[in-house]
Length: 221
Image (tube, rainbow, N blue to C red; front, side, top):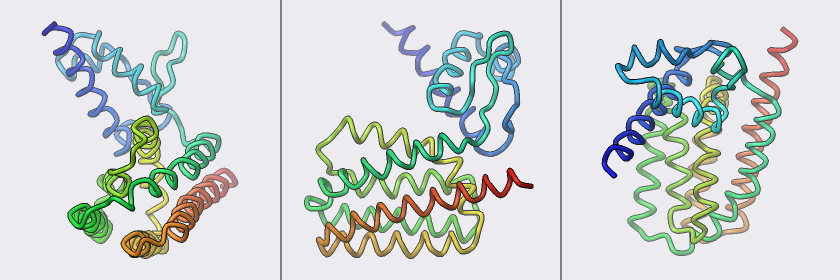
């Protein structure tokens, strides 16, 4: 049993490394990820690299193209609409299930994650924005009793990472994110679930609109 477990762990580590390098722009959209070059760079065989690329394809970071291999995916309007519409459907459900049973310690953890998110934005630490944003949202949903939905939303937030980094480049988006996150905490603490769920949907939708407008403007340019 030990070798397969070790192998899966190695493939997971490569997934994490490649994902972060794609998010950081080390591999721009359209870049070809060659298995032999990656295996040599990471000093591993091609097998865990191949499995890592299949996982990244499932997450939407790469496309496996016949005779070309893995190509880093571009930013997609269809994916943005799909991911953010799913988030609007699923995240209010988690919020409504989780918030009524969040403890004082849970809310302290949520506030701490929001503080870390704001600190990263102030420092313009782009590499941490998406991860800390996801941590904030998942902390609010931590007590939800829908494990399958939690897993799906965690994956959606991970996919959203590259888009969140792009959207938060604008100072107006940064300030709005701060305001909306803190209002979401306030409403949740007060038990105002209808208002909190409505704000959450609006929050996700505004990010979607920002991204669509950005890509459409870039397309015109």
